[in-house]
Length: 38
Image (tube, rainbow, N blue to C red):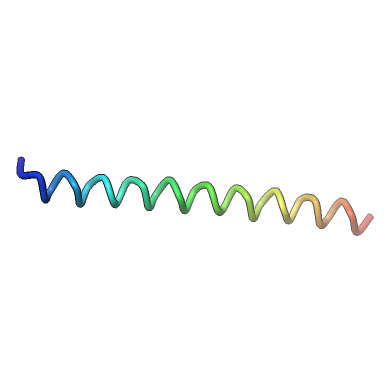
């Protein structure tokens, strides 16, 4: 396994983590917004 392949996999993993984190933040923001509407 070359260093380039490992680096690419790490980048892909970090992108997954970032996407999951942003979606979680968006979800919590939606929840807060819907609570404010009531």
